Length: 468
Image 1 (cartoon, rainbow, N blue to C red):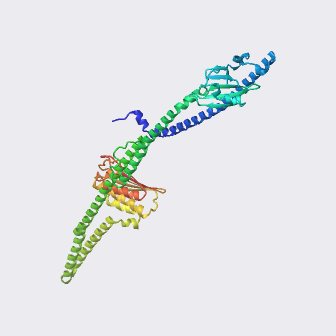
Image 2 (cartoon, rainbow, N blue to C red):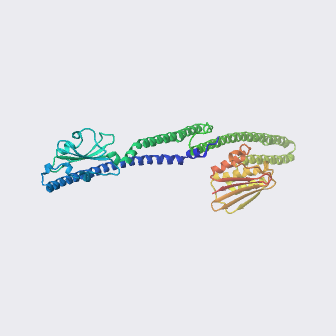
Image 3 (cartoon, rainbow, N blue to C red):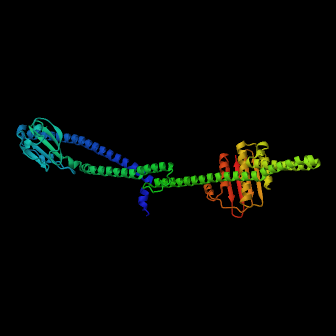
């Protein structure tokens, strides 16, 4: 069942890394915003304190000046000037566009002389915050939360009169936007932390846990359980691709091991067949020749007394048979190990090989003396290629080319045989029974060389071995 494009993009490692990066940054920004809001509130409190302190002192001074003016104008003592003689509405009516406020003027007996505004406290004036303090001669600005709104209370005494002036303003009305932000902030933080927890859960579920399962599967593959990574792992796309690659690698290792077992079995069978062939040839040819030599020697010994002249002919026959036996032994020896390679070098050994196979041999350039292991690798690869062309390809024409260019040596064997299909993977050669090519490749790898095989059906084969 195919997943939709949106979840597929979400399962990508880049998307989840982006989420894990942006979410902590968002939380940090929220924390900084909270800190900024709190700092802004504190600054507003300080500003409101200063402004209300200056305002209440200024209004108290205005009332005192107005009392002096009325006293001088009417010629009465200042203590006899009543609040009704003052134009308090003009001076104490404070309009604020954003906040509720109230202004009260109280005499020394806690009698209400003037009031303005809707933000009036409960109880008698004597119980109001700031009244008794102002009547005692103090002035200050305090914040109160004795109501549901929170208020700023500024109070001051009236100079030269035992009066108290109190101004009240709603603090929450001044900071309403910030208060609303504070109220919604817990929900924002809860949402952010919940989202972070979900992201962490999905990170563990789709990254950490799949990586752990993949590590366990890799360990099982190392123990030989090649199907350990075959089951899909529910994780991010990159981990699933890694699992597929690991599974493909496990299949390749399994195929390589199977091919190696087949190759080892073929090598063992070839060894046994070669031993059996050598035993047959030694028994059928060399041993029989030696037996015949024994008979000829016995006959010569008998003729020595009867016919001395006929002994010469018998001895000549013995010499010919001995020469044939020696040649057979040499042929066996050359098949087992090329002595020409050690004694005369690579070119002489290849000349002998191609001459016996009736193949063409071409040398280009001056061949440097290679190490014994590399010379043996070149010879064995050429020998196997020539034998394959004769036995399997049924080639009528075989050409062996040896090219030397400075430090580079290239062996190329052409034939016009029937050819075959070359698989893309060398390990597949064992399934087709091309164990000779596997042996050539192993020799090329041991010699730090490069072997390539090009062949098409009915168009012959070209085997190239390069050493640098």
